[in-house]
Image 1: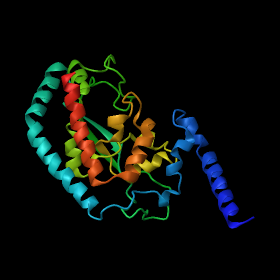
Image 2: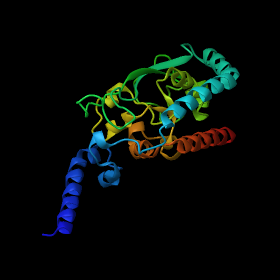
Image 3: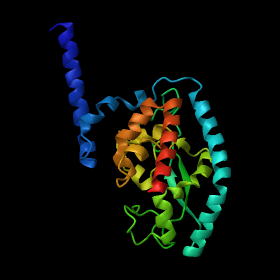
Image 4: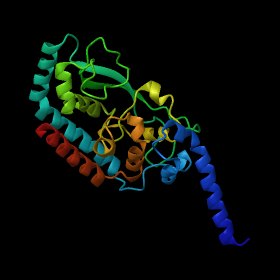
Length: 259
């Protein structure tokens, strides 16, 4: 067998191995064909962001801080009105607090994991802030409402959810460094504990307020069910992509308000 045949056989064998490895993923998420994730089928320590401008992480963090500060100042009157409306509408706190899982603590921007346990991507826990949209006695870790008819939602909650205004307090998370403006959405701990090898890749970057999933994915599905959008962002993220997502998000919110 010549060198070319050896190479072809190696590629075929590699594909077979990865397809077999993703069978469990196919059972977890049957709507995502296993081989559609073939571009991401590589050892986790080799998976990461493509080589970008070396100042990208610094500029991304700077943009996060500046935009979050400006956003809080501009949106402060609206946030005060929302807080008053929530208080008048139903008993309970104005803000909803929940533990979420953020970026893995051992991942570095050069694409390598600091510790030898490269597969142990657990992520850093943090408390996420939102305006409360459900009754105070609702289970904070139950499945999120999939439509406005959910009885757990309050009257004000239905309105601010439909306008995506319940996410405004997450600007606090951005200023604290737990989140970025753009990135995969953070998941709850009990869901992250069940992550498989591929789903754990979401923890390679900071979670964000908005991202590809919010613009293109189905909002009726759970966060981890739009995995391919998150993996696409992780591999292709750059300053221009972040700015495009922010502009499109603003347009999406304005369009929603006009509906």
